[in-house]
Length: 229
Image: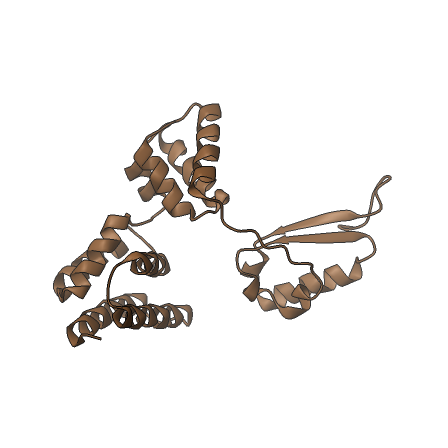
């Protein structure tokens, strides 16, 4: 009876958040539900990566794509929420939330909520800590050490971020990718480094040892810079 209408309504709506995180088997079950109740139910799916939705589900949906919010819009909404909740937030913390959110308001609100649980006075350090995210300058330091050939220094910083700070390897790869795109360097070297990031990301998704893959990634960066690629 989940999608059977009630009262004067002719149909019910089923909202499903992040269906891309479901297994293919679970998505197939969702497809059968959509088919069985197509006369009495409407399914609305919210996802971050439509490529992970199986074709039988996608073919039954009308896709609407939304662009990420700009920094100004994220700041405005975060300030509005902070004001209503009696929170104080520094400018550094605001910039950290914008960096973490990447235009996703849900990520911004989650970061704000997580930091507020600890203390209503929110600063930059707490935001990065509660979200297990490296600061942009730490990512830049990691890249600088690697590209200058200092493997020991890069390895030490990598170990600190992964094991002492508890930052997920995939998150580090994502942050390194974002930093590389903004970094001034020879184009052929940038292409090579992004290829190394993609290879490491793929291997991690296949279940490879994260410590080995991340250290190998740093080693590839060092070797690429020394080879002058």
